[in-house]
Amino acid sequence: MQAMDFAIIKERIYIRTAELAGLPLDGVGPHTTLEGIGLDSSDAVLLALEIEELVGAEVDVGVFLRFPTVGEAMDELARTYAPLVSKT
Image (tube, rainbow, N blue to C red; front, side):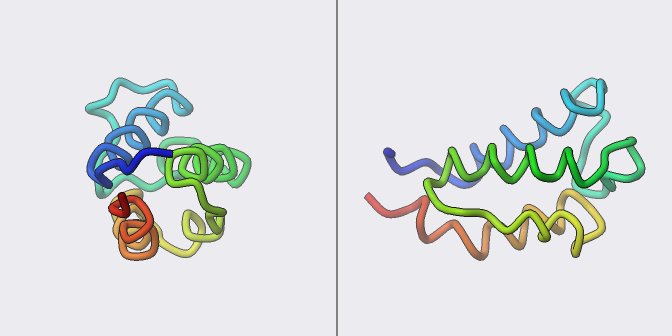
C-alpha cells in the first residue's frame, strides 16, 4: 500500500460513518457519538475494517467503543497508525 496522509483517512472515515448512519456528511463531526447517530458495535467493526484496508494493519475495533466520540476515536487511531501511514 502506498503511504497515505492520515487526514485523508480521517475524511474517509467521517464519510463512511455518515453513510452507515444515513446522514449527510455535515451530520457527522468530531463530537458525534456512534450511539448518538444510531450506530452500534457492528458498525464499529465495519469502520475498523475500512481503516485496516487503508493503513494495512489490524485495527482494534474497541477504539470506537472506548472513546465516546468519532473525533476522540480518530485521534487515538492517528496516534497509533499515523507512523504506519507516513512510511514511504
